[in-house]
Structures are given as structure tokens and as C-alpha cells.
Image (cartoon, rainbow, N blue to C red):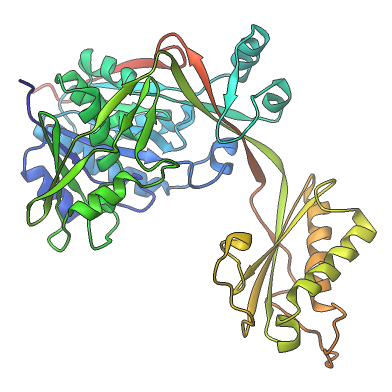
Length: 459
């Protein structure tokens, strides 16, 4: 007989915007056993990882961590945060640890044990592993990584599974701040430590990872509660106007999956193909039926990013009807001018024309493109080795939309309106260099844990 466990989750990405306090406070009143939140994602693209920057505002990070920490210490229950400061780099872990220490000092909290789990991987280590015969296997059609790919990489993090969290809990951690980690692992670790199966433990993580995303109607940043008993998880929406329904919970189980029924973690995957979802009460759904398929190998996912150049941006509005119907010709004209002067895109520079109002979001995958939009906004994006070169290419690319020689255009004032003649300076451009896995012998091989005994008020 396993011990029932209640987990409170306030956010699917801590501090991306601050989570809502009312539903969180309601969850705290229900006496959870753990407060758990993921704090990172690859959704922001490769730049935050490669540049080692956070995209969540520092004061929002402080606000969310303070709410979680004060509740954790008041209730005397563990608090777990993974993928610290958006990307889970060592810098991110240290930043969150410093915030925790500052809050503890300012609020004069009673002593507690803090575990910091680091999972950034030195590039030299990966290079030596390749030279020693290890394979870094590409995912989703990528080729295996070689030394050339690592040379293009600025920073790598390993996506840990539940074992490092379990080790920290076994060693008495009251607060865990971790580097890049599987969303599911945060929730699975305490459940595994309480004797629950891998199937229900990782399945719970899949359902709860994004907090109120598994509820309806859509309301981001609201808290949910998960109650785990035997091989079932009861997921409850805590905002008074939300409900966890079989369709909303099952829908989130399939969220962001290539195969909607499989959730892969290091050491195996959750098979959700025979799961059932039942309305338990007005705002709670009971989910069960997951299986865990063990793997004979432990393969840890690696995420890596590298800088490719400086970025410049120009904004253009096209309203002229003769130009909107011939927008591809206008872009071709602009590209021809670039080729004359700089050569084709993809060699010394890259240029992108994002056409909002005509396939700007889905581009070639768009299924319902309007045949003749009445206006189009174009974002010209250029990446080049230097800022000066990127500025010149971007200026020529954008201004030649203005000067495009198209049949039917009679005006001499130009066929496009520049928002400003200014070329905007964007953040540097980065690329994902690693979306790979590497086999290890132990889940702790690519991470380490440091413990801090936080001593303040001893009364």
C-alpha cells in the first residue's frame, strides 16, 4: 500500500509571467505534501541558452520564488524547482540559489537544507567522450554530433531525470533548485520516494507539468493540485472558474508530443495509449492506466546552442494592392539586389522575410492562406558575422521592397511604407546545435549536487 501524496503546482514556467496568488493560496490551504514548479523551457529558442541569459524578469523570479519558499517553510514541506532561470544553466541555478538565500535572510526563516543540482556539461568533456568512441545521437532526424558541431556550440545542458531529485530528497533537502530537467522528473521524484510506481509517477508529471494548462477554460498561471493514490492521479483545478475535465486532462497528456501516447525520459518512457480519464467531481478528473516501459540504457538528452551572428531587423508595411498581389515578386527583386552585391543568402549572411498577413506564422505549412490580403506587414531579419554587415544587408533588403519594379505599379512614391528608416538592432542570432542523447551508466554522471545548510532564526 503506497502513501497518498498531494502536489501543488503553481506554474508551468515559473516567472515567465508571475503566477496568480489566489489559487496558489487556496492550494496551500489544502495542505499539500510538496510544492513543485518547472522554471524553464526550450520554447524561447536557442539564444537564452547560448548567451546564458534569463528571459523571465528578475523581479518576477524573486516574487514567485518568495511565494513558494514562504509557503514551503510555513507548511514544512519540500519545495522543488527545475530548469532554474529559464535554461537550467549553472548560472541559472546559482541565481535562484542566491534569491532563496536572500529571501531566507530578509524573512528570518528558520533553518532549512537547500540542494542545488547542476547539469551544465563542459564542452571539453563531450569532446573527450567523442574522441573516446562515445556516440552523441541526433534526435528527430539530426545527424550524430561530431567535433565540428561541438565547435559551433557555446553551451550545453543535460536534461536530468528523477534520480538527482530523489538523491537530494533522501539527503534531507527541504528546498531543491535544479538545472535543466525533464518536466516530469520534478513530480516523479517525490512520488518514487514514497513508493509509487514509475508509471504513475512520471504520468503525474506529464499531466501536471504546465499547471492550469490541463484545465478548461484556458487560464494560464493558475495553480492545480494533484492527489496521487495507488495507480491513479486526481487532478484538480483551483481557480473557481476552471475545471479539470477528461478532455482537458487527456488533451494535455498529448501536449507537445511527436507520438501523443509516449512521454520519454532517461531510462524509459510512459505509455499512455490505454489511459482512462473520468470526471471525479466538478473540478477534478481522475486519470489512470499508464504504463512505464523500461529501457536497457540510460540516455540523457543534451540541449546545446551556439552563436551564428549579429541580427538586424526592419519593419515594412505593404498596402498598395498591386504590390500585395505580387509580394513574392517584390521579395524576389529585393533578393536579386542582395545577390548582386553580397552573393546568395546562406553563404556570408542569411535573410528572412516574415510576411504577417500572408503566411507570416506558419509560412510554407499554412493551409488557409488568403489569396489577396489587403495589407501585409513584413519583418526583414538578417543574420551576419558583424553588426555593420548585417545593417547594410538589412537596409538593402528592406529598401528594395520599397523600390521593387513590378508591373501595374503606377505610383512613384514607392509601393511599401517603412515604419522607420532606422535599422533595428536585434539580439545576436543563435542556433540549436544539440538536440541529442548520450548514453551514460548512472543518472548522476552529468550532474552534481551541492548542499547548503541555511541557518537564520534558530528559535
